[in-house]
Amino acid sequence: ENNIVRPKGYKVSWHSNPEIEKHHFGHAHPMKPWRLTLAKGLIMSYGMHTAMDTYVSRLATREELEDFHSEDYLDYLKTAMVAMPDDETPKDYNLGGSDCPIFEGLFNYCSMYAGASIDAARKLCNNESDIAINWSGGLHHAKKAEASGFCYVNDIVLAILQLLRKHPRVLYIDIDVHHGDGVEEAFWSTDRVMTLSMHKYDGLNFFPGTGDLDRTGPDSEGNPGAHHAINVPLSDGINDEQYVWLFKTIVGRCVDKFQPTAIVLQCGADSLAGDRLGRFNVQVQGHGTCVAYCKSLNIPLLLVGGGGYTPRNVARAWAHETSIAIGCDADLDPLIPEHTPYREHFRHNTLFPTLEQILGEPRVNRNTKKKLDEIVSTITEQLRFVNA
Ligand code: V1P
Ligand code: CA
Ligand code: ZN
Image (cartoon, rainbow, N blue to C red; front, side, top):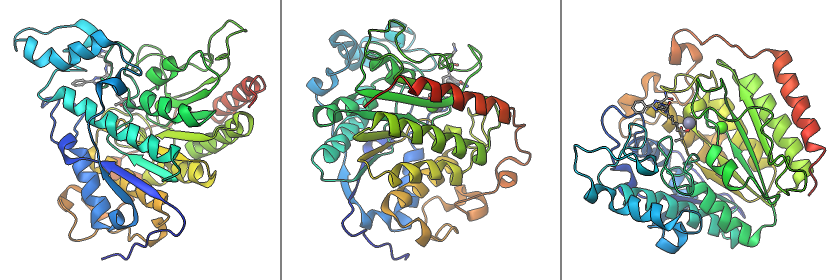
C-alpha cells in the first residue's frame, strides 16, 4: 500500500455513491456513469480514501431541486419513464432525444448527483471542509426547465445557490471542453457570481454553439451581471503549456478583481487528449495543474466532474486531481497499483500516458500565440469593469 497521510489542519470531503454508477444512458451513448466506478477504484487503490472525509451521496429533496428547476419540469422528469411507452419519443423539455434519453432510474440518478453537490457545498459553508469533491456532478448544461447535452438537473447551480447563502461572491470555473452555458445563464444577471468557461468554440459546429469571447453578460449597462461572464473560445489541439498559461493568467486576474470568497471548479475531463468527443491535446498533468492552481489560492473550493468520454483517462485525471486536493500527489507511484480494479483498462499502466501513447499522432494545434494573446488582452479589458 502507498502510505497516504491525512493532511494536518486541512480537510477534504469526498461525496460519492455506487448507486449513481449503475445507471445506463444506453449502449451507443457516450456518457458512461461507470467511469465513476473506474475512477473510484483507482482513488481507493492508492489509499486516498483514508485521507478524506467520505460521505455517501443522498437524494436531493424536491425543495432543494426547486431552488433552481421549475415544478412542471421536475414533475415531468420524475414520471417520464412511467408515462412514456418505449415506442414514443417525447421531445418535451428536450427529454427523450438521443442526447438526453429517458432511462431506468433517471430521477434517482439526477437527485443523487445533485444531493452530493449540495452536501459538498454545505461542507464548505460550515467550514467543515477546505475542499469538497463530487466527481458525479458537474452537469453544466441543464436549464431551469430543460435538459440539454446529457444534463438534466444542474447540480452546479444548486451548489452555488447554497454557497451564496454564506458567501458574498462565488467564482465558477469550467474546464470541460464544452461551454458551461447552463451555469452562465442561471447567474447572467447577478454580480455575485462570476462565470468563466474555457471551451472549444466553432459557432454551431460544436455543441452547444455558445461561448464566444464577446459574450460577457447582459448588454444593458445598469444590469449588475454586466461583464461577469467570461468566455475563452479555443480551437482544436491546444496543448498543456498554452492551456495552463491561459488558465493561470485569466483565473489570476479574475481573482484579483472579483475577490471571490468561494470557488467552484468544474473539471470536465473531455478536455483531455484522446477524448471521444473532445478536440484538445491537454494531458492529465496540465488538467491537474489547473486544480493545483485553484487550491493554491486558499479559498474554499468545490470540485465537480462533468464530461469525459474515454473512461480510462477520466479515471486517471480525477484520481490525480483527488491526490492534488489531499496534497499527496508527489507520493503517488505513477505506475498504477497491481491490485487496482479493472487495471487492464489502463493501457501502459501509468497515470500519465504520453501524447504518443494516447493518440499515436497528436491532433494539429490550431491555436496561435497571437490568438491566445488577443483573448487575454480582451478579457483583461473586460475585467477593468469588475470590482469586488
Ligand atoms: O451535438 C449535439 C446535438 C445533437 N445535435 C442535434 C446537436 N449533441 C452533443 C452533446 C454533447 C454534450 C456534452 C456534455 C458535457 O459538456 C457535460 C456532461 O460534456 C453530442 C455529441 C457530440 N459529439 O458533440 N451528442 C452526441 N455526441 C451523442 C453521440 C451518440 C449518442 C448520443 C449523443
Ligand atoms: Ca468549459
Ligand atoms: Zn463536455
